[in-house]
Image 1 (cartoon, rainbow, N blue to C red):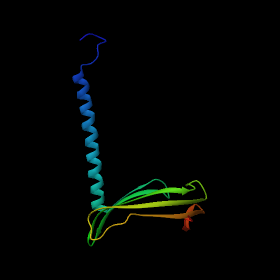
Image 2 (cartoon, rainbow, N blue to C red):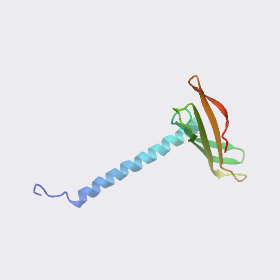
Image 3 (cartoon, one colour):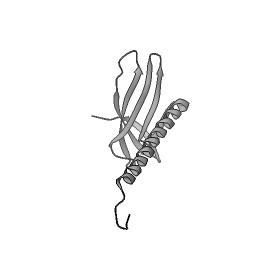
Image 4 (cartoon, rainbow, N blue to C red):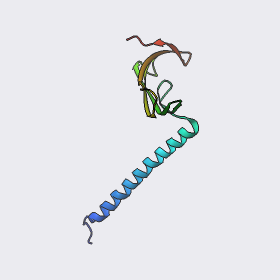
Length: 125
């Protein structure tokens, strides 16, 4: 092979295959870690500030088995303002259930008092 020629297609496919394997391995490792944390702690929380979080937890009630997922987002204000409203959405992914599940959504408002958030009530819609 002389200088300036492109690499053969076989080397390019080998590199792509290695990258795909590493990406797949990282996904499997992340799922395994999350499953381990759920088994030990019962929930995993990804906090994105004082009022925003994503929470994944095990549902282990009589007749119900599965996962619950809650996510939050600001509907008014943000963490830098004096008042903020946060909407929480709750979803269930059940593999065993004794009755139909209902996903839910609710909104709560807070105001900042001396550096901490104080609950002021539900959002007005």
